[in-house]
Image (cartoon, rainbow, N blue to C red; front, side, top):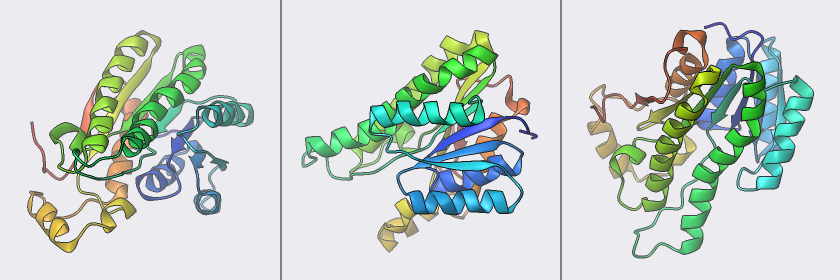
Length: 247
């Protein structure tokens, strides 16, 4: 899966799945624009890539801010000349039962998880159309496919990402641009580390492979979809869930 000559922009690249994805894409030869809010952690990612002989740059970005998205994407194109691969990974949770959920928490999750993917895609698509080559990969979730109590906002945002993925795939397929989604299941990240032990145990029992997934498991799927090997795959949701959800 040689990505030499490609430029990838990864949102939420400072930790978890985004961090692993940035490293995996760089390992395959892509130049990586790592974007997230935490500049210090971004610098660590860039340092790891540079230390391994790769090319990367850090871009401080809050994806809930439309103007920041526009300016950062312009800066990435100015520095690297183009964007070939866009990984919309940034996401947050604000969990609560729907009857108690505050409107602000609904809006924050939809804005960060879903609206940002639309805005980032819009900001990158011109570069992809110009060169008639592109890969857009949206990181959704198993809970966007099956729902989850206490996560109406999160599940809705991730289900929306799946619909967005398919719509974009239909719009840009004729220009040799693919748009796919990766749907992680129970993955060991900062987001899941905070779960109560009983919930972790119950989650693990629901996984036929008998283990919690790693960010690298998801990053491997993203790298595949970004590669030439996946050139005839678009509008697809690739499940990375250990068999937790099938069909």
